[in-house]
Length: 347
Image 1: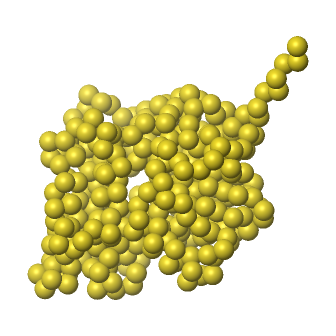
Image 2: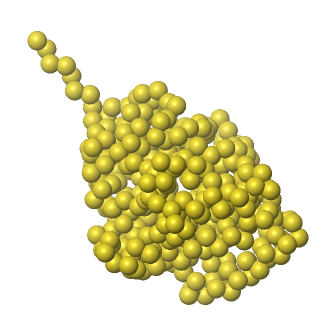
Image 3: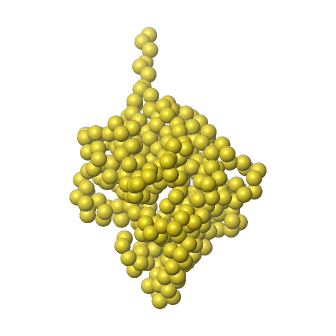
């Protein structure tokens, strides 16, 4: 998306424009800040996440691009270059090559899916439960001639409509954090992988520095959940244990944010004056919200658009605060293997 008017036309996704404000009301009420509870978010996770991505996807694509995830940052590279490097890293860790069937779990609008397919020549299937993101992803696949090597399956990653032992590899980029139960989603990934094959992911996690008795930490966690459509946020230790409980052998588990020469959250930091990331600076955010307010007033954007922009601003602020305090990472990388099936003992 390249213009504010195109952004405005996409706000709400598959939600009817006159119902956007009501959807914002319902979404906000799921969260602690508005009196919601974890139990409500986990039991209604599909509605929570679908509403979030219907409301937020066009904003994400407008300000961030097609790859809706983070990456480690190097000096002298653009944001897009860092995201592509992250996608290539996953492809290399999984050993992807032509002829392999790969699953992208929670694929968004397919930015990583397309880049990984081009880089590795593998065939990649994106699993997504959001109709708007799938339709947008199909448009983008067609526009770059990847409709044959990249495809989508609509389904819940807690109950995938996919046969056992289908894929040669699987990955998830900033996606399984939306699951209400980590063991449940990892078990489904385990089920659809062939024996001996690999799963790689970047997971959103609380680090060992997070203190549940610290009021500031709790506030940041609540803002992260509100701004990013999360039922709850797991710790790195819980993530590793959940993978093991699902049956995986954990080969490598590491917070890649610790090795990033530049902070992963740097593009989001409003204190950084940058023309490249002007939309995230204080001036850029003010101008963006002023423009959106005008578009909403003129009925070129649906009522509720400014409120979406504001809870996404909460997301940006909480990500920066969580990153600066070291209590949160979106780059907890795990490489795991589904064990080979044990041969039956001969009697």
